[in-house]
Length: 499
Image (cartoon, rainbow, N blue to C red; front, side, top):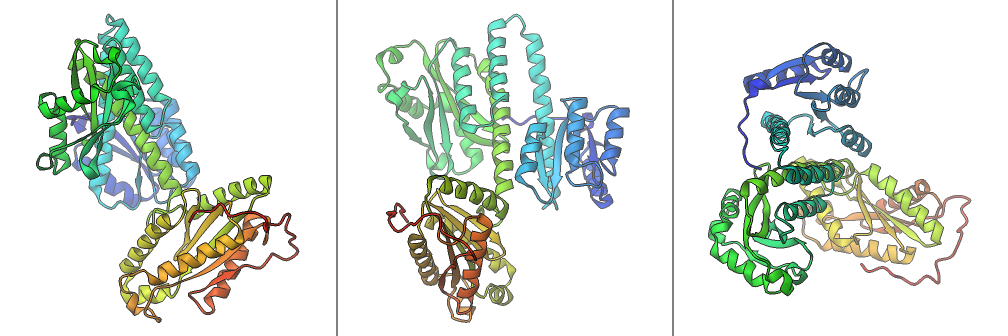
């Protein structure tokens, strides 16, 4: 969205944290930036301020505090006034915390400790811009009561957007109501693909525009060498003859009733948080850029909400370093997948491995090099396994992979393939390892052969890993848990696994 000029002195921020040093740092920084700031040393004190004083525009609160939690304070603040925006601070997130925060209406979150105070400023400024936009949109509603049809369409769109947290659906709703705003005109969203600097027609209304195709327009390299340059190109597309010719040529694939609609294609850039996202296009002879911008300003706000939702959910289930799933999510999904396998009497396998001599690697090469190794291992695993497999960092240098519909024979073959791949892969500093190569040791377990609970399958694979570690750079098969009797045989199950 466009940059909005705000006056920090008009915004009151309540900072709530049980660490005095954090409160003092935030109070000083926010004050230096011009904001009005009050502090509270715990959740109860924060609630007391809300109940007895002028309401703040923003509550900036830690999640974990003695007594009343930050989420409890956020819920209380929203109950007092839904117009209070809440930003939570946390040093460790969880899926449940993310879902609860989203339901309460928390706008954003900050990770503690802060990498730099400018991150705090950026979030607070964006919240203030959100407040400004909300007030501005409320003003528009009050001022445009006579334009009843437009207002009803806009309100209907906002209601739909408020119930939606899906990014593609947000764009679809934007196309739908931009079309309604101009008497059912054809509407398209061209998504910016940053890596190859192209605009791709991803969303169309109706679907038959361009014959259902997704034509791609390459931006001139010399004019799209930065995000700021791309923004300038998108803003000027109405004067870009090459892009207009591209759209008109693509339109020849549309059905005759759409090709002959009156009007010309008009374009409006779509940016959020100062980043170019793409461009909306409408074919109309009733063009009013102010109306289009009014709709898209609202879409931009909810687009950011959807992106935030995706980010919060992803951060709650992903390991921050390797971007693989974290151990909590792995256990939840493993339990689900095992239950499915038991219902349909189908095998499921688990690979449990760690990096040999990882402590030696860290000691000789430094922890940054160790982190870089873990990141590369994450990339390798994402490429080596199917999207239906659950690949996670178990902790430290340990990794786990759940492989649904995979027999023990196939799992052992895949584990050996992985071991050989890593042994032959080139890693920075691997010459400092005892064997001169970076290697892994792997344990494998399977349902139904070894156990019937996810906890037992982990233990069986972990015990097998322990055996493999005795010689290292080896794959070991697990042994059935004591007293376990396999409920069915996998001998006749044909492999359906594609590596």
